[in-house]
Length: 214
Image 1 (cartoon, rainbow, N blue to C red):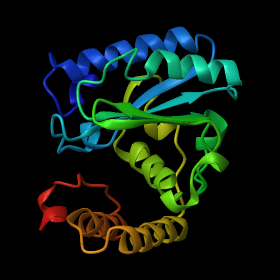
Image 2: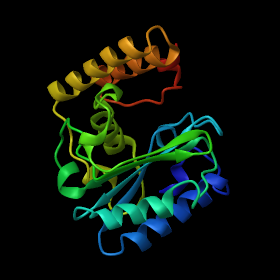
Image 3: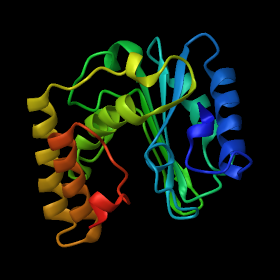
């Protein structure tokens, strides 16, 4: 499946993801269900040095504090240098993502990179409310449809679907957040168009696709 990534097969991104999978398997040896790439690497429009590497890990059981610390230690940028802007990693339990849901519900979130501030969040309640919580439901819907499995079952077999009313409500929440926090920006406009296209056609497109960019 990795050949579907929006980068050449011999790229630094492929080598980085191979190393990430190896470290995830070593750190979560009896717990890891799958490793899934999402974002622009999966949907298209990846831009070297500007785009993030978006990855979701799925595990069977909850992670204790020591295991979360070990994941952070092995995957943060100082331990595994990211070849682009940064890594955005989220870990979920399988039973949590098996059904569509709108809450964050993650086990661990790690953001870090050469052009990204380090942040780790061990529980959803620790995430600042002003940052918004809609991202997680949207990202899980995207990975269900467009995610690339580097390890484990296909993403559509692991991630459950939101109902259409739930999806519409989350997209509306995202639009309100962008209107408040990034009014008039190109990113806000693209996210709004992308959300409408998902509702109208059922498909998630790249933020840089012609239909979204126009």
